[in-house]
Amino acid sequence: MYEYLTGMIAAVTPSYIVVDVGGVGYLVYAANPFRFSNGQQAKVFVYQAVRDNDISLYGFTTQTEKNLFVKLLNVSGIGPKSALAILATNDLQGLVKAIQNNSITYLTKFPGVGKKTAQQIVLDLKDKLAQVGTDNLLVTETISNNTNSTENGLLEEALAALSALGYTRNEIKKIKPQLEKATANTTDEYLRLGLKFLMKN
Image (tube, rainbow, N blue to C red; front, top):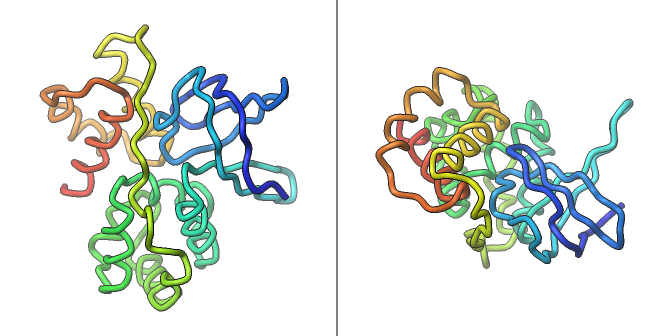
């Protein structure tokens, strides 16, 4: 079982990153891959999921984020993809408060989370989040070094990332005009704004 990987970010895609550790490239799925930058030296906290026909790595910028991911996986009806979509929001403190305050409406805004699953999240985690840790719940923002993409290219990458998280084409189409009017300098910023708009709709 891996605890973390320290190496160079060799690739960033809408759904995963590749971490080069001593010449070996590890494919790591991430909630928001664009928090990382190509060529960046990074410490990526990882969770290894082993299933019948698949072994996958899921990566996080902080230990707290990883702990919350593990807690979410223990909820009936939540798989790795749904857990990543939930953690993609930059407002992890808001997420914790929503769970503690039994805010079902907030939780059902995430892809793959219906009312029944949202209720299960509250039931299973309401009294367990103190164990996750409350420091550094907000993910540290990283600065992208991507200077090759145009502004439109950054937006398209962000939209692809939203799709990878499980949001439908119609959901993304509704917020695209808002994103086109927004001011953002990186894919990460566009993705954060997109998630914010989706949570408001």
